[in-house]
Length: 564
Image (tube, rainbow, N blue to C red; front, side, top):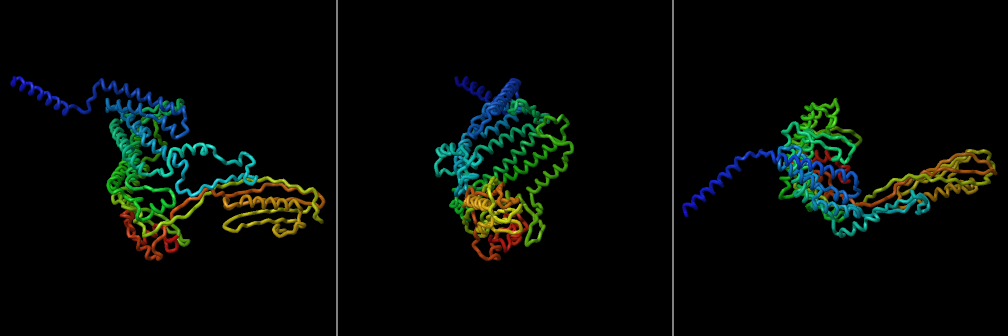
Protein backbone atom coordinates (compact mmCIF):
# COMPACT_ATOMS: atom_id res chain seq x y z
CA UNK A 1 0.00 0.00 0.00
CA UNK A 2 2.78 2.37 1.01
CA UNK A 3 4.77 1.37 -2.09
CA UNK A 4 1.78 2.06 -4.32
CA UNK A 5 1.22 5.48 -2.69
CA UNK A 6 4.93 6.31 -3.11
CA UNK A 7 4.83 5.44 -6.82
CA UNK A 8 1.65 7.49 -7.26
CA UNK A 9 3.26 10.45 -5.50
CA UNK A 10 6.36 10.15 -7.70
CA UNK A 11 4.23 10.02 -10.86
CA UNK A 12 2.26 13.09 -9.78
CA UNK A 13 5.49 14.89 -8.94
CA UNK A 14 7.00 14.06 -12.30
CA UNK A 15 3.82 15.25 -14.02
CA UNK A 16 4.00 18.56 -12.13
CA UNK A 17 7.70 18.97 -12.98
CA UNK A 18 6.99 18.09 -16.61
CA UNK A 19 4.12 20.60 -16.76
CA UNK A 20 6.24 23.35 -15.17
CA UNK A 21 9.08 22.56 -17.51
CA UNK A 22 6.77 22.81 -20.50
CA UNK A 23 5.44 26.17 -19.27
CA UNK A 24 8.92 27.55 -18.74
CA UNK A 25 10.23 26.48 -22.13
CA UNK A 26 7.09 27.24 -24.14
CA UNK A 27 7.71 29.78 -26.90
CA UNK A 28 5.99 32.99 -25.74
CA UNK A 29 5.46 33.99 -29.39
CA UNK A 30 3.65 30.76 -30.22
CA UNK A 31 0.13 31.32 -31.53
CA UNK A 32 -1.95 28.35 -32.57
CA UNK A 33 -3.74 28.36 -35.93
CA UNK A 34 -7.04 28.19 -34.05
CA UNK A 35 -6.18 31.31 -32.02
CA UNK A 36 -5.06 33.11 -35.15
CA UNK A 37 -8.37 32.37 -36.90
CA UNK A 38 -10.32 33.40 -33.80
CA UNK A 39 -8.31 36.64 -33.63
CA UNK A 40 -9.14 37.42 -37.26
CA UNK A 41 -12.84 36.85 -36.60
CA UNK A 42 -12.73 39.06 -33.50
CA UNK A 43 -10.88 41.72 -35.51
CA UNK A 44 -13.55 41.74 -38.22
CA UNK A 45 -16.24 42.08 -35.56
CA UNK A 46 -14.29 44.91 -33.92
CA UNK A 47 -14.06 46.80 -37.23
CA UNK A 48 -17.81 46.41 -37.78
CA UNK A 49 -18.61 47.50 -34.23
CA UNK A 50 -16.46 50.64 -34.52
CA UNK A 51 -18.01 51.48 -37.89
CA UNK A 52 -21.54 51.14 -36.48
CA UNK A 53 -20.69 53.36 -33.52
CA UNK A 54 -19.10 56.15 -35.58
CA UNK A 55 -21.90 56.06 -38.15
CA UNK A 56 -24.46 56.37 -35.37
CA UNK A 57 -22.64 59.36 -33.85
CA UNK A 58 -22.46 61.00 -37.27
CA UNK A 59 -26.19 60.54 -37.86
CA UNK A 60 -27.31 61.59 -34.36
CA UNK A 61 -25.02 64.68 -34.17
CA UNK A 62 -25.16 65.16 -30.37
CA UNK A 63 -25.49 68.78 -29.23
CA UNK A 64 -24.52 68.53 -25.56
CA UNK A 65 -21.69 67.09 -23.52
CA UNK A 66 -24.01 64.67 -21.76
CA UNK A 67 -25.42 63.33 -25.05
CA UNK A 68 -21.93 62.99 -26.48
CA UNK A 69 -20.68 61.04 -23.45
CA UNK A 70 -23.72 58.75 -23.62
CA UNK A 71 -23.06 57.96 -27.27
CA UNK A 72 -19.28 57.48 -26.99
CA UNK A 73 -19.54 53.89 -25.80
CA UNK A 74 -16.41 52.23 -27.16
CA UNK A 75 -16.65 49.27 -24.80
CA UNK A 76 -17.79 46.76 -27.46
CA UNK A 77 -15.14 47.53 -30.14
CA UNK A 78 -12.51 47.81 -27.39
CA UNK A 79 -13.43 44.38 -25.97
CA UNK A 80 -13.29 42.82 -29.45
CA UNK A 81 -9.93 44.43 -30.32
CA UNK A 82 -8.60 43.38 -26.90
CA UNK A 83 -9.72 39.79 -27.53
CA UNK A 84 -8.09 39.77 -30.97
CA UNK A 85 -4.89 41.18 -29.47
CA UNK A 86 -4.89 38.60 -26.67
CA UNK A 87 -5.47 35.71 -29.08
CA UNK A 88 -2.78 36.82 -31.51
CA UNK A 89 -0.34 39.46 -30.27
CA UNK A 90 1.39 39.30 -33.66
CA UNK A 91 -1.69 40.71 -35.40
CA UNK A 92 -0.69 44.34 -35.89
CA UNK A 93 -4.19 45.50 -36.81
CA UNK A 94 -5.48 44.04 -33.55
CA UNK A 95 -2.67 45.75 -31.61
CA UNK A 96 -3.45 49.11 -33.19
CA UNK A 97 -7.20 48.74 -32.68
CA UNK A 98 -6.60 47.75 -29.06
CA UNK A 99 -4.37 50.80 -28.47
CA UNK A 100 -6.68 53.20 -30.32
CA UNK A 101 -9.98 52.15 -28.73
CA UNK A 102 -8.28 51.69 -25.36
CA UNK A 103 -7.41 55.37 -25.36
CA UNK A 104 -10.95 56.25 -26.46
CA UNK A 105 -12.29 54.19 -23.57
CA UNK A 106 -11.15 56.98 -21.26
CA UNK A 107 -14.41 58.72 -22.14
CA UNK A 108 -16.33 55.74 -20.69
CA UNK A 109 -14.89 56.11 -17.20
CA UNK A 110 -17.75 56.97 -14.85
CA UNK A 111 -15.55 59.02 -12.52
CA UNK A 112 -14.39 61.14 -15.46
CA UNK A 113 -17.95 61.60 -16.72
CA UNK A 114 -19.15 62.58 -13.26
CA UNK A 115 -16.31 65.11 -12.91
CA UNK A 116 -16.91 66.65 -16.34
CA UNK A 117 -20.65 66.96 -15.78
CA UNK A 118 -20.11 68.42 -12.30
CA UNK A 119 -17.66 70.98 -13.66
CA UNK A 120 -20.04 71.78 -16.50
CA UNK A 121 -22.83 72.33 -13.95
CA UNK A 122 -20.63 74.55 -11.80
CA UNK A 123 -19.18 76.69 -14.56
CA UNK A 124 -22.55 77.10 -16.29
CA UNK A 125 -23.65 79.24 -13.33
CA UNK A 126 -20.29 80.37 -11.95
CA UNK A 127 -17.42 82.20 -13.58
CA UNK A 128 -14.04 82.17 -11.81
CA UNK A 129 -13.15 85.49 -10.20
CA UNK A 130 -16.36 87.10 -11.48
CA UNK A 131 -17.68 89.69 -9.02
CA UNK A 132 -20.65 91.01 -10.91
CA UNK A 133 -22.22 90.56 -14.30
CA UNK A 134 -23.93 93.58 -15.79
CA UNK A 135 -27.10 92.84 -17.69
CA UNK A 136 -28.34 95.91 -19.53
CA UNK A 137 -31.71 96.07 -21.31
CA UNK A 138 -30.37 98.93 -23.43
CA UNK A 139 -31.80 98.77 -26.94
CA UNK A 140 -31.10 100.82 -29.99
CA UNK A 141 -33.79 103.32 -29.04
CA UNK A 142 -36.69 103.60 -26.66
CA UNK A 143 -34.77 104.35 -23.45
CA UNK A 144 -34.08 100.76 -22.54
CA UNK A 145 -37.03 99.22 -24.38
CA UNK A 146 -35.93 97.58 -27.66
CA UNK A 147 -37.94 98.68 -30.64
CA UNK A 148 -37.12 95.66 -32.82
CA UNK A 149 -35.74 92.12 -32.64
CA UNK A 150 -32.15 93.31 -33.15
CA UNK A 151 -32.44 95.33 -29.96
CA UNK A 152 -33.24 92.25 -27.88
CA UNK A 153 -30.18 90.46 -26.51
CA UNK A 154 -31.63 87.89 -24.11
CA UNK A 155 -30.30 84.33 -24.65
CA UNK A 156 -33.03 81.85 -23.79
CA UNK A 157 -30.92 78.70 -23.30
CA UNK A 158 -29.12 79.84 -20.11
CA UNK A 159 -32.44 80.80 -18.53
CA UNK A 160 -33.74 77.29 -19.08
CA UNK A 161 -30.51 75.47 -18.19
CA UNK A 162 -29.59 77.38 -15.05
CA UNK A 163 -32.24 75.87 -12.71
CA UNK A 164 -31.20 72.37 -13.76
CA UNK A 165 -27.53 73.20 -13.27
CA UNK A 166 -28.20 74.66 -9.84
CA UNK A 167 -30.14 71.59 -8.80
CA UNK A 168 -27.09 69.39 -9.43
CA UNK A 169 -24.70 71.19 -7.12
CA UNK A 170 -24.39 72.87 -3.77
CA UNK A 171 -23.17 76.42 -3.31
CA UNK A 172 -19.97 75.15 -1.67
CA UNK A 173 -19.31 72.54 -4.33
CA UNK A 174 -16.25 74.17 -5.93
CA UNK A 175 -14.50 71.91 -8.49
CA UNK A 176 -10.88 71.31 -7.59
CA UNK A 177 -7.95 70.55 -9.85
CA UNK A 178 -6.94 67.66 -7.60
CA UNK A 179 -9.95 65.73 -8.96
CA UNK A 180 -8.41 65.88 -12.41
CA UNK A 181 -4.95 65.04 -11.05
CA UNK A 182 -6.37 61.94 -9.36
CA UNK A 183 -7.90 60.79 -12.64
CA UNK A 184 -4.63 61.41 -14.44
CA UNK A 185 -2.93 58.94 -12.12
CA UNK A 186 -5.68 56.32 -12.01
CA UNK A 187 -7.04 56.54 -15.56
CA UNK A 188 -5.14 58.59 -18.15
CA UNK A 189 -1.56 57.50 -17.51
CA UNK A 190 -2.31 53.74 -17.27
CA UNK A 191 -4.26 53.88 -20.54
CA UNK A 192 -1.51 55.89 -22.22
CA UNK A 193 1.11 53.35 -21.12
CA UNK A 194 -1.07 50.48 -22.31
CA UNK A 195 -1.58 52.13 -25.70
CA UNK A 196 2.13 52.89 -26.06
CA UNK A 197 3.03 49.28 -25.30
CA UNK A 198 0.59 48.00 -27.92
CA UNK A 199 1.79 50.47 -30.56
CA UNK A 200 5.47 49.75 -29.93
CA UNK A 201 4.78 46.07 -30.57
CA UNK A 202 3.93 47.08 -34.16
CA UNK A 203 7.17 48.91 -34.92
CA UNK A 204 9.00 45.83 -36.24
CA UNK A 205 6.26 45.19 -38.83
CA UNK A 206 7.48 47.40 -41.65
CA UNK A 207 4.51 46.46 -43.86
CA UNK A 208 1.89 47.38 -41.24
CA UNK A 209 -1.27 48.97 -42.68
CA UNK A 210 -4.55 49.87 -40.98
CA UNK A 211 -7.43 51.11 -43.13
CA UNK A 212 -9.85 53.64 -41.63
CA UNK A 213 -13.00 52.98 -43.59
CA UNK A 214 -15.57 55.67 -44.46
CA UNK A 215 -17.91 54.23 -41.82
CA UNK A 216 -15.20 54.55 -39.16
CA UNK A 217 -14.86 58.21 -40.14
CA UNK A 218 -18.58 58.72 -39.71
CA UNK A 219 -18.78 59.94 -43.31
CA UNK A 220 -20.18 57.36 -45.78
CA UNK A 221 -19.01 59.39 -48.80
CA UNK A 222 -15.40 59.63 -47.64
CA UNK A 223 -12.47 57.64 -49.01
CA UNK A 224 -10.40 55.06 -47.19
CA UNK A 225 -7.54 56.47 -45.11
CA UNK A 226 -4.38 54.40 -44.75
CA UNK A 227 -2.30 54.34 -41.59
CA UNK A 228 1.20 52.90 -41.66
CA UNK A 229 4.26 53.15 -39.42
CA UNK A 230 4.50 56.89 -40.09
CA UNK A 231 1.21 57.35 -38.29
CA UNK A 232 2.14 54.84 -35.58
CA UNK A 233 5.29 56.81 -34.73
CA UNK A 234 3.32 60.05 -34.93
CA UNK A 235 0.66 58.74 -32.53
CA UNK A 236 3.39 57.56 -30.17
CA UNK A 237 4.88 61.05 -30.38
CA UNK A 238 1.57 62.48 -29.23
CA UNK A 239 1.11 59.91 -26.48
CA UNK A 240 4.60 60.42 -25.08
CA UNK A 241 4.12 64.19 -25.31
CA UNK A 242 0.79 63.90 -23.49
CA UNK A 243 2.39 61.68 -20.86
CA UNK A 244 5.10 64.30 -20.32
CA UNK A 245 2.51 67.03 -19.93
CA UNK A 246 0.32 65.03 -17.56
CA UNK A 247 3.27 63.94 -15.42
CA UNK A 248 4.21 67.62 -15.10
CA UNK A 249 0.63 68.54 -14.23
CA UNK A 250 0.39 66.00 -11.39
CA UNK A 251 3.75 66.97 -9.89
CA UNK A 252 2.48 70.22 -8.35
CA UNK A 253 -0.40 71.32 -6.16
CA UNK A 254 -2.76 73.57 -8.09
CA UNK A 255 -5.62 73.52 -5.60
CA UNK A 256 -7.58 76.78 -5.39
CA UNK A 257 -9.88 76.93 -2.39
CA UNK A 258 -12.33 79.33 -4.07
CA UNK A 259 -12.49 81.44 -7.20
CA UNK A 260 -12.97 84.80 -5.51
CA UNK A 261 -10.98 87.54 -3.79
CA UNK A 262 -10.53 85.47 -0.63
CA UNK A 263 -9.31 82.51 -2.66
CA UNK A 264 -6.77 84.66 -4.50
CA UNK A 265 -5.32 86.07 -1.29
CA UNK A 266 -5.25 82.65 0.40
CA UNK A 267 -3.64 80.69 -2.40
CA UNK A 268 -1.16 83.24 -3.73
CA UNK A 269 0.24 84.13 -0.33
CA UNK A 270 3.75 82.82 0.19
CA UNK A 271 2.78 80.47 3.03
CA UNK A 272 0.19 78.56 0.96
CA UNK A 273 0.55 75.14 -0.70
CA UNK A 274 -0.41 76.45 -4.14
CA UNK A 275 2.20 75.64 -6.85
CA UNK A 276 4.26 73.55 -4.44
CA UNK A 277 5.87 70.25 -5.42
CA UNK A 278 4.17 67.16 -4.01
CA UNK A 279 6.64 65.65 -1.54
CA UNK A 280 5.79 61.99 -2.17
CA UNK A 281 5.84 61.84 -5.97
CA UNK A 282 6.47 65.26 -7.53
CA UNK A 283 10.20 64.84 -8.27
CA UNK A 284 9.70 61.36 -9.71
CA UNK A 285 6.84 62.62 -11.91
CA UNK A 286 9.04 65.38 -13.35
CA UNK A 287 11.85 62.93 -14.04
CA UNK A 288 9.43 60.72 -16.01
CA UNK A 289 8.02 63.82 -17.73
CA UNK A 290 11.44 64.75 -19.12
CA UNK A 291 12.16 61.17 -20.22
CA UNK A 292 8.77 61.02 -21.98
CA UNK A 293 9.34 64.36 -23.72
CA UNK A 294 12.70 63.22 -25.08
CA UNK A 295 11.16 59.93 -26.25
CA UNK A 296 8.45 61.90 -28.03
CA UNK A 297 11.12 63.60 -30.12
CA UNK A 298 12.74 60.24 -30.87
CA UNK A 299 9.39 58.95 -32.13
CA UNK A 300 8.88 62.08 -34.24
CA UNK A 301 12.29 61.56 -35.83
CA UNK A 302 11.38 57.91 -36.49
CA UNK A 303 8.12 59.01 -38.15
CA UNK A 304 10.08 61.42 -40.34
CA UNK A 305 12.57 58.71 -41.33
CA UNK A 306 9.85 56.20 -42.23
CA UNK A 307 7.90 58.82 -44.17
CA UNK A 308 11.00 59.79 -46.14
CA UNK A 309 11.62 56.16 -47.09
CA UNK A 310 8.06 55.35 -48.23
CA UNK A 311 7.84 54.38 -51.89
CA UNK A 312 4.18 53.31 -52.23
CA UNK A 313 1.29 55.50 -53.38
CA UNK A 314 0.71 58.21 -50.75
CA UNK A 315 -2.63 59.52 -52.01
CA UNK A 316 -4.69 57.87 -49.27
CA UNK A 317 -2.14 58.17 -46.44
CA UNK A 318 -3.24 60.12 -43.40
CA UNK A 319 0.08 62.00 -43.20
CA UNK A 320 1.30 63.41 -46.51
CA UNK A 321 3.92 65.98 -47.44
CA UNK A 322 4.51 68.13 -50.49
CA UNK A 323 7.12 67.07 -53.03
CA UNK A 324 9.40 69.93 -52.01
CA UNK A 325 9.21 69.13 -48.28
CA UNK A 326 12.69 69.47 -46.75
CA UNK A 327 13.22 66.40 -44.55
CA UNK A 328 16.69 67.54 -43.48
CA UNK A 329 15.39 70.87 -42.28
CA UNK A 330 12.56 69.20 -40.35
CA UNK A 331 15.05 66.77 -38.83
CA UNK A 332 17.36 69.62 -37.82
CA UNK A 333 14.46 71.52 -36.23
CA UNK A 334 13.38 68.51 -34.18
CA UNK A 335 16.96 67.81 -33.10
CA UNK A 336 17.45 71.44 -32.08
CA UNK A 337 14.33 71.48 -29.92
CA UNK A 338 15.23 68.14 -28.36
CA UNK A 339 18.72 69.37 -27.50
CA UNK A 340 17.12 72.36 -25.75
CA UNK A 341 15.43 69.88 -23.40
CA UNK A 342 18.65 68.03 -22.72
CA UNK A 343 20.85 70.89 -21.52
CA UNK A 344 21.75 74.59 -21.76
CA UNK A 345 20.92 76.39 -24.97
CA UNK A 346 21.21 80.03 -26.00
CA UNK A 347 18.02 82.09 -25.92
CA UNK A 348 18.00 85.37 -27.87
CA UNK A 349 15.58 88.15 -26.95
CA UNK A 350 15.05 91.89 -27.42
CA UNK A 351 13.44 94.68 -25.45
CA UNK A 352 12.94 98.45 -25.21
CA UNK A 353 14.27 100.52 -22.32
CA UNK A 354 13.94 104.31 -22.17
CA UNK A 355 13.19 104.48 -25.90
CA UNK A 356 16.28 102.42 -26.69
CA UNK A 357 16.11 99.05 -28.45
CA UNK A 358 18.34 96.28 -27.11
CA UNK A 359 19.17 92.75 -28.22
CA UNK A 360 20.57 90.26 -25.77
CA UNK A 361 20.90 86.55 -25.09
CA UNK A 362 21.28 84.19 -22.17
CA UNK A 363 21.56 80.47 -21.60
CA UNK A 364 18.46 78.53 -20.58
CA UNK A 365 18.59 74.98 -19.25
CA UNK A 366 15.02 73.66 -19.36
CA UNK A 367 16.14 70.22 -18.17
CA UNK A 368 16.73 71.69 -14.70
CA UNK A 369 13.00 72.29 -14.33
CA UNK A 370 12.62 68.50 -14.38
CA UNK A 371 15.90 67.34 -12.85
CA UNK A 372 16.24 70.00 -10.15
CA UNK A 373 12.59 70.80 -9.41
CA UNK A 374 11.41 73.97 -7.72
CA UNK A 375 9.73 73.11 -4.43
CA UNK A 376 7.61 76.26 -4.27
CA UNK A 377 7.33 78.69 -7.18
CA UNK A 378 6.27 81.49 -4.85
CA UNK A 379 9.61 81.30 -3.04
CA UNK A 380 11.38 82.46 -6.20
CA UNK A 381 9.98 85.95 -5.60
CA UNK A 382 11.12 88.43 -2.94
CA UNK A 383 8.86 88.69 0.15
CA UNK A 384 5.43 90.09 -0.73
CA UNK A 385 1.82 90.33 0.32
CA UNK A 386 -1.18 89.72 -1.91
CA UNK A 387 -4.05 92.09 -2.52
CA UNK A 388 -6.83 92.26 -5.06
CA UNK A 389 -8.26 94.85 -7.41
CA UNK A 390 -11.19 94.92 -9.81
CA UNK A 391 -11.06 94.97 -13.59
CA UNK A 392 -13.91 95.13 -16.07
CA UNK A 393 -14.80 93.51 -19.35
CA UNK A 394 -16.64 95.27 -22.14
CA UNK A 395 -18.57 94.52 -25.30
CA UNK A 396 -18.18 96.84 -28.28
CA UNK A 397 -21.22 98.11 -30.15
CA UNK A 398 -21.64 100.32 -33.22
CA UNK A 399 -25.06 101.54 -34.34
CA UNK A 400 -26.48 104.09 -36.76
CA UNK A 401 -29.56 106.13 -35.84
CA UNK A 402 -31.47 107.70 -38.76
CA UNK A 403 -33.17 111.02 -38.19
CA UNK A 404 -35.29 113.16 -40.55
CA UNK A 405 -36.55 116.56 -39.29
CA UNK A 406 -38.30 119.36 -41.22
CA UNK A 407 -39.03 123.05 -40.58
CA UNK A 408 -41.76 124.32 -42.90
CA UNK A 409 -40.67 127.97 -42.89
CA UNK A 410 -37.24 129.34 -41.93
CA UNK A 411 -37.74 132.59 -40.00
CA UNK A 412 -34.12 133.81 -39.98
CA UNK A 413 -33.83 136.96 -42.13
CA UNK A 414 -31.34 137.52 -44.93
CA UNK A 415 -30.76 133.92 -46.03
CA UNK A 416 -30.72 133.20 -49.76
CA UNK A 417 -29.46 129.75 -50.70
CA UNK A 418 -26.92 130.22 -47.92
CA UNK A 419 -24.57 127.37 -47.16
CA UNK A 420 -25.18 125.71 -43.82
CA UNK A 421 -23.37 122.78 -42.12
CA UNK A 422 -23.85 120.98 -38.80
CA UNK A 423 -21.08 119.14 -36.93
CA UNK A 424 -22.01 117.27 -33.75
CA UNK A 425 -19.39 115.25 -31.87
CA UNK A 426 -19.30 113.64 -28.42
CA UNK A 427 -16.45 111.67 -26.91
CA UNK A 428 -15.98 110.37 -23.38
CA UNK A 429 -12.53 109.50 -22.07
CA UNK A 430 -11.77 109.60 -18.39
CA UNK A 431 -14.02 111.79 -16.27
CA UNK A 432 -14.81 114.80 -18.43
CA UNK A 433 -16.67 114.44 -21.75
CA UNK A 434 -15.79 116.32 -24.91
CA UNK A 435 -18.80 117.88 -26.67
CA UNK A 436 -18.39 119.67 -29.99
CA UNK A 437 -21.61 121.13 -31.46
CA UNK A 438 -20.99 123.71 -34.18
CA UNK A 439 -23.09 125.17 -36.98
CA UNK A 440 -21.63 127.19 -39.86
CA UNK A 441 -24.22 129.52 -41.37
CA UNK A 442 -22.60 131.36 -44.26
CA UNK A 443 -19.40 132.86 -42.87
CA UNK A 444 -20.53 132.77 -39.22
CA UNK A 445 -19.87 129.86 -36.84
CA UNK A 446 -22.13 129.19 -33.88
CA UNK A 447 -21.42 127.07 -30.81
CA UNK A 448 -24.77 125.48 -29.95
CA UNK A 449 -23.92 125.39 -26.26
CA UNK A 450 -23.84 129.23 -26.11
CA UNK A 451 -25.77 130.43 -29.19
CA UNK A 452 -29.20 132.07 -28.95
CA UNK A 453 -32.32 130.27 -30.18
CA UNK A 454 -33.02 133.16 -32.55
CA UNK A 455 -29.64 132.83 -34.30
CA UNK A 456 -30.43 129.58 -36.10
CA UNK A 457 -33.40 127.77 -37.68
CA UNK A 458 -35.55 125.84 -35.20
CA UNK A 459 -34.93 122.48 -36.90
CA UNK A 460 -31.24 122.77 -35.95
CA UNK A 461 -32.16 123.12 -32.30
CA UNK A 462 -34.36 120.04 -32.61
CA UNK A 463 -31.36 118.16 -33.98
CA UNK A 464 -29.22 119.45 -31.14
CA UNK A 465 -31.84 118.25 -28.65
CA UNK A 466 -31.75 114.78 -30.22
CA UNK A 467 -27.94 114.84 -30.00
CA UNK A 468 -28.05 115.64 -26.29
CA UNK A 469 -30.70 112.92 -25.89
CA UNK A 470 -28.31 110.35 -27.40
CA UNK A 471 -25.59 111.49 -25.02
CA UNK A 472 -27.87 110.88 -22.07
CA UNK A 473 -28.88 107.46 -23.34
CA UNK A 474 -25.41 106.20 -24.24
CA UNK A 475 -23.31 107.64 -21.39
CA UNK A 476 -24.74 105.84 -18.36
CA UNK A 477 -22.42 104.18 -15.84
CA UNK A 478 -22.57 100.91 -17.81
CA UNK A 479 -21.28 102.51 -21.00
CA UNK A 480 -17.62 103.35 -21.48
CA UNK A 481 -16.04 105.66 -24.05
CA UNK A 482 -19.06 106.37 -26.25
CA UNK A 483 -18.44 108.20 -29.51
CA UNK A 484 -21.35 109.99 -31.21
CA UNK A 485 -20.90 111.74 -34.56
CA UNK A 486 -23.18 113.59 -36.98
CA UNK A 487 -22.34 115.79 -39.95
CA UNK A 488 -24.68 117.42 -42.48
CA UNK A 489 -24.40 120.26 -44.98
CA UNK A 490 -26.87 121.96 -47.29
CA UNK A 491 -28.43 125.32 -48.20
CA UNK A 492 -31.10 127.44 -46.52
CA UNK A 493 -33.36 130.31 -47.73
CA UNK A 494 -35.51 132.63 -45.61
CA UNK A 495 -39.22 131.78 -45.85
CA UNK A 496 -38.66 128.34 -47.36
CA UNK A 497 -38.62 124.89 -45.76
CA UNK A 498 -35.46 123.23 -44.42
CA UNK A 499 -35.10 119.45 -44.31
CA UNK A 500 -32.23 117.87 -42.38
CA UNK A 501 -31.75 114.12 -42.56
CA UNK A 502 -28.89 111.75 -41.89
CA UNK A 503 -27.38 109.22 -39.51
CA UNK A 504 -25.97 109.60 -36.04
CA UNK A 505 -23.01 107.21 -35.90
CA UNK A 506 -22.76 105.84 -32.36
CA UNK A 507 -19.99 103.62 -31.03
CA UNK A 508 -19.52 102.56 -27.43
CA UNK A 509 -18.13 99.94 -25.10
CA UNK A 510 -20.61 98.58 -22.61
CA UNK A 511 -19.38 97.17 -19.33
CA UNK A 512 -20.47 93.54 -19.04
CA UNK A 513 -18.72 92.18 -15.96
CA UNK A 514 -16.36 92.96 -13.10
CA UNK A 515 -13.53 90.61 -12.17
CA UNK A 516 -11.16 90.44 -9.24
CA UNK A 517 -7.46 89.99 -9.96
CA UNK A 518 -4.36 89.71 -7.76
CA UNK A 519 -1.89 92.47 -6.98
CA UNK A 520 1.57 91.87 -5.56
CA UNK A 521 2.85 94.30 -2.95
CA UNK A 522 6.56 93.98 -2.19
CA UNK A 523 7.48 94.11 1.47
CA UNK A 524 10.44 96.42 0.84
CA UNK A 525 10.14 99.92 -0.58
CA UNK A 526 13.77 100.20 -1.68
CA UNK A 527 14.67 98.98 -5.16
CA UNK A 528 18.28 98.05 -4.37
CA UNK A 529 17.16 95.99 -1.37
CA UNK A 530 14.43 94.38 -3.43
CA UNK A 531 16.95 93.23 -6.06
CA UNK A 532 19.04 91.47 -3.40
CA UNK A 533 15.94 89.62 -2.20
CA UNK A 534 15.88 87.53 -5.38
CA UNK A 535 17.79 84.80 -3.59
CA UNK A 536 17.45 82.16 -6.32
CA UNK A 537 18.23 84.14 -9.49
CA UNK A 538 19.15 81.08 -11.56
CA UNK A 539 15.75 79.57 -10.65
CA UNK A 540 17.31 76.25 -9.71
CA UNK A 541 19.70 76.38 -12.66
CA UNK A 542 17.13 77.10 -15.38
CA UNK A 543 18.90 80.43 -16.02
CA UNK A 544 22.42 79.33 -15.07
CA UNK A 545 24.30 82.55 -15.94
CA UNK A 546 22.11 85.12 -14.18
CA UNK A 547 22.60 86.89 -10.89
CA UNK A 548 19.83 88.89 -9.22
CA UNK A 549 20.49 92.04 -11.25
CA UNK A 550 20.60 90.02 -14.45
CA UNK A 551 17.34 88.25 -13.63
CA UNK A 552 15.33 91.44 -12.98
CA UNK A 553 16.79 92.91 -16.19
CA UNK A 554 15.78 89.74 -18.06
CA UNK A 555 12.27 90.10 -16.62
CA UNK A 556 12.17 93.75 -17.73
CA UNK A 557 11.77 95.08 -14.19
CA UNK A 558 13.85 98.23 -13.67
CA UNK A 559 13.80 100.90 -10.98
CA UNK A 560 11.03 102.79 -12.76
CA UNK A 561 8.55 99.92 -13.05
CA UNK A 562 9.50 97.33 -10.41
CA UNK A 563 6.70 98.38 -8.07
CA UNK A 564 3.97 98.85 -10.68
